[in-house]
Length: 177
Image 1 (tube, rainbow, N blue to C red):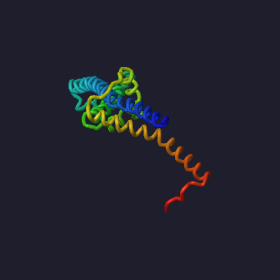
Image 2: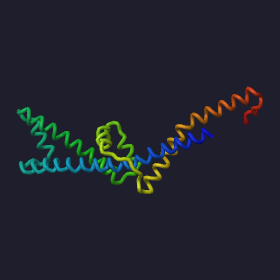
Image 3: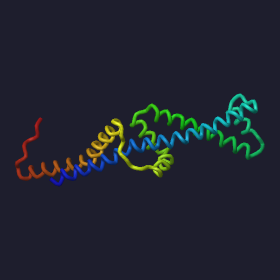
Image 4: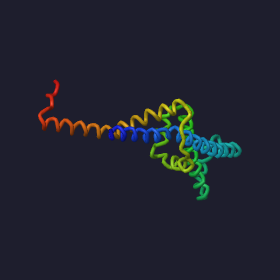
């Protein structure tokens, strides 16, 4: 009886935690979209500057600045290259959040290379319950999976103890072949 109660308690906690993933994905998408838009604004500024100064591309302008004798110009060019790289990564992330499923979004969010973004998202995260069927289904399935992973070793251990007691008392049935 206590085992069943603990099992239900574990499932309840796992369900509540699992239901937060869709909510977190929504918050993360908002954070990512804002960062993407601000970075896009910077990149568009680089493109306008390159066009104004008759460079064929932003990369051509940056390459030219990397050859400059002035250290601050080279440093600025390196920062622009880093911004372009971040912009491409953000563009891929925004695409995943527009068209991907909750699993691909979760894999993207919980990637160790994006831990900083997740940490910033968690700063403003408020727990809740998703209002979409996909979010609730994801939470229930993940909750059941977490419950299964946590309780499986205990169920296995309980069966081993029961089998061991049966063998010691001589009431165990022979294994089926």
